[in-house]
Image (cartoon, rainbow, N blue to C red):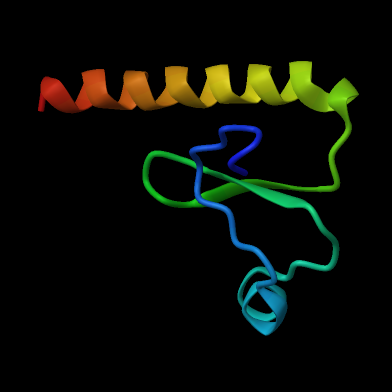
Length: 75
């Protein structure tokens, strides 16, 4: 994490916590959590080829969060 300068929370060696609470069956596992704190997608494994799709997912999620925030302002 330090070498790659990762800033996001990372659970290492989660063992039973990861397996029981989040049904992690393989590593690495990534969870996509929306602005309401809900898990909206889960990915097991990683390939550099998946990066464009991951980036697109982040952009869609940010746009959805921004849209929700704008809608909430008018209420």
